[in-house]
Each structure stands twice: as C-alpha cells, then as structure tokens.
Amino acid sequence: MDQLFRETNRVRRPGEMYDDDSETDEKADGTKKAAGTRPSFIAEIFTILTLIFAGETILPLIHPVPASSHASHSIPPSAWLTNPTPLVMFTIVHYLVSRTGLNKFVPTKMSALWETALAGFDALGRSIVVCTFFVDAFLQKPYIASNWYTVIILTWIGVYGGGLVVNALDMFSSEWKFQTPGEFKPWGWTTVDFWVSEHTGTLKDSSG
Image (cartoon, rainbow, N blue to C red; front, side, top):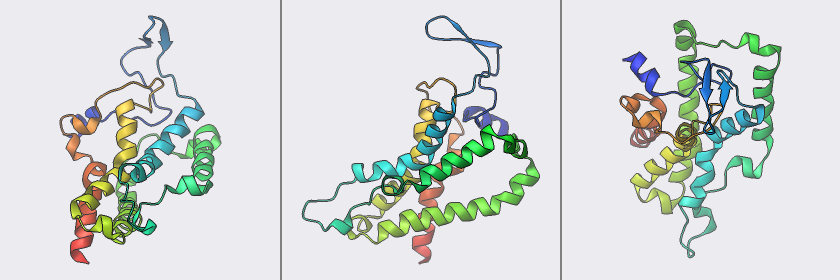
C-alpha cells in the first residue's frame, strides 16, 4: 500500500531524477531532452515559495467581507506581502542546502530511523501553524467564526492550497504541465497534509 501511495503522489525532491523510465524524453516540439534535467534555482525557489505561501496569499481574495463590516473582520494579507524576511530566509536556506557543499549533509532518502525521530517535531510544528496562524486567527473574526464550515474550508485552503497548486502543475519537474494531483488519485486521501488541517482545527475547537 505504501508503494502504491508513493507512485500516485509524484512530488519529487529537487535534484532527484525527473524522468525515471528512459534516458531521454520527448518535448512537445518533438526534440529530445536529457533525462534527469533539474529545474533552475529560480524555478525551484519559486515552487517552494508557492508551496508555502500560495494558500494564505489567496485567502483574502476568496473571502471578502461585507462593506459594512469592520476592517478587523477581514483576513490579513500573507506574511510575505508585508515582510520580505520569509522570502529571503527560505531563498538563502534553499541555496545553501542545494547549491553548496552543505547538500552532502542532506539525506536524499529518509530512513525509517530519521522519519521516526523527526515525526514528533514535524507534527508539533504543523499543529502550531494550523492552530495558531489559521484556526485561532479565524475564530477571532466573528464574520468567519459564525460558521464552522467556513473555518474548516479556509483553514484547508490556507494550509494545503500551495501544495495543491504545486502538484496540479507538477512544479517540481523540469517542465511544468497540468496533471491530476496525487491527492485525487487512488489512495491519495491518505496524504496527511490533505486532511490534517481541518481535523486538527476541529479537535482544537472541541477541546477548547
């Protein structure tokens, strides 16, 4: 089952081989390109920033408030629009671990031991992001908090919207193309990122 899930969710890490089954691949114009072509650094960092910030960037656009509502009821713009620090930080870190000698210390494949050791920190970090930056923020806005389904949907978009865009456009490959995201393929529902936001938010609200 795990192998099936990995095959249906083809989001590859930058630097891995991108064309697995042949040494060359044919472009739309009939020419050949070498297998394993890696995206440029600009393409990679744009993809990573899309993965991180796309969801929260579109939230203010898809959930406008009535003109009569107070400004505090609206969803604030994404952090990167008001402070360039996140963009600079992620760009520098990605360059260091992907284009310098530091990449030798980054494992290309996570072992079961590493996965287990880091799972707790990963879960804690995700929970803090979901509960603090989305659920708590939404519950403080009466116009949103009045409908719990709105809180769940907006939280899901904010947390997973970027991942959905990246998967739908296959942005980690050397040439972008429209495709069905792995989450909408068989067993795609097992992707933790796909459902953790709404479940975490619901549990937090019910426990509080």
